[in-house]
Length: 280
Ligand SMILES: C[S@@+](CC[C@H](N)C(=O)[O-])C[C@H]1O[C@@H](n2cnc3c(N)ncnc32)[C@H](O)[C@@H]1O
Image 1 (cartoon, rainbow, N blue to C red):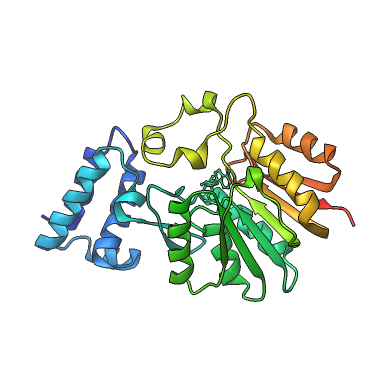
Image 2 (cartoon, rainbow, N blue to C red; image 1 turned 90 degrees about the vertical axis):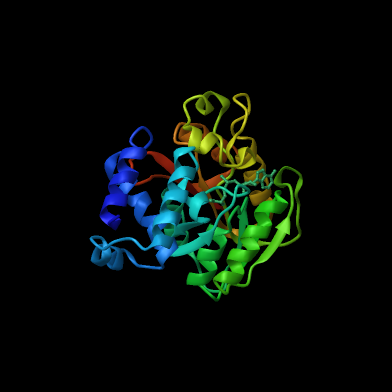
């Protein structure tokens, strides 16, 4: 069978889950991981006959995808800010909107800054910052032992030195001071859970995703309280946020006397990130 024909098979078989372009993108990711080809090389080889190994591997991956498994779990990697990260069921698959948050942080980093990433998951935020800015000192925390195993592997993969801590941020204090604190904590309410796709609900860690309807800002409030104590004067706190809770977030941060509060939309036009400052 030609490679192009297997791509069509992906599009037909996954039609109930993904549109044609998404299915073609998924096919490319699987073929890339099987063959080691770049996207350009895939285009060059697309009209060739698939080798027996390629055919078997592509069809095995298709069977997994048909069960609703995210492609990142089928190929065990996800792209983030131009780098590949290992992902397992213990970590959130890094999202494109988080790349936008990292971009914003990189623009705000002073030389030799001390950075703390809370709820590091795959380590994508901490590792990207450190790999772009070797001068900064990065600490990364997560309550999940499984997530930290993967984050440490990713840090080694990208030759970045990061101090990892297993801590519950709801019960955390430290004497250390930071120039930047960043967090993309769990923020999806139970109400929103009902509208979520099975490929997220069944395959991504609920510990990374959900909060209660009654207390949706639980992590943000705990982290903002911590930040008030451990940010250096003029230090910044960055959050990725629930698109529906921008106003509540601003009110909460104002109430704690943070200044220069800036709410930013992501590329899809959704309120997605906040930066604020601890006054001098
Ligand atoms: C939305 S995920 C973000 C992962 C990663 N930073 C990213 O942006 O892709 C939230 C992370 O917070 C961690 N987490 C959940 N509860 C926590 C707690 N009480 N203390 C510290 N981390 C926690 C989860 O294990 C998960 O890795």
